[in-house]
Image (cartoon, rainbow, N blue to C red; front, side):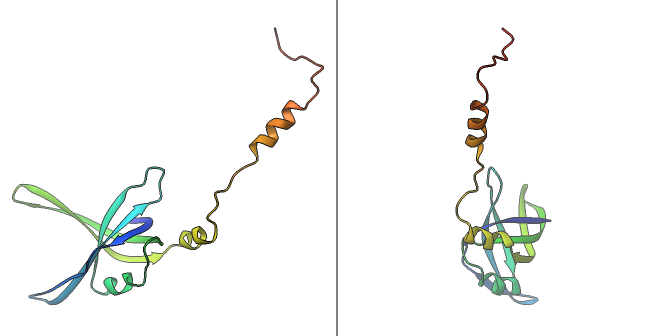
Length: 124
């Protein structure tokens, strides 16, 4: 699965030691670029934590992830684990073009109003 959005914040890095060795992880909150944006917390593990340090808040990234749910004592918990991410081209476009694009709709209506008014085309 994949998601594209703006990096809102990076939560503090966590680390520890398990039976398999040392580990580290960091959660980051991404806000989607939809009409109704949603915030999603995604977990980055091991070397992805180091790569995430290079990304600044507000930049647009595309994250590839696996999602998994598990049951513990009658409750279900869901994890979103990133396995790859990349800076999005939209991040560069947004930084260069901060003004919204508008279309000249008013001019089209003015041209319609300036047509020959001597002929009344109304059916009544």
